[in-house]
Image (cartoon, helix red, strand yellow):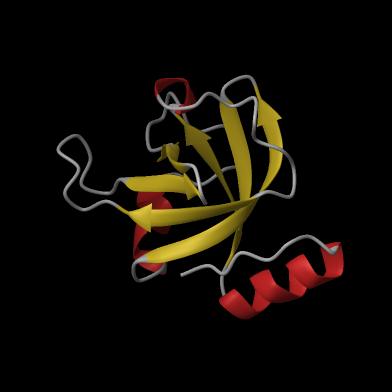
Length: 114
């Protein structure tokens, strides 16, 4: 399952985002603009954008924040797969065990998804 992170230009841009990078997606129920907002964070940087949730920002083949909001409790992780302009396409990983297995197989430093 794929999602798109948008709004990166309002934070740190997208030039630092690389394929394979771990992203933490955290529900933001107090967001005044979107009841189904999901913020995207990269440790140790912090918030880098939000999961796209509009017909104008969700690319074909990706799910909107509204479509995935009820599929997890508080947070979920994913890996950047592509970066196109200011949008990162992220593949969701449903469990911490899968994050650990994938990271171990890629032989990259491991950052636990909380």
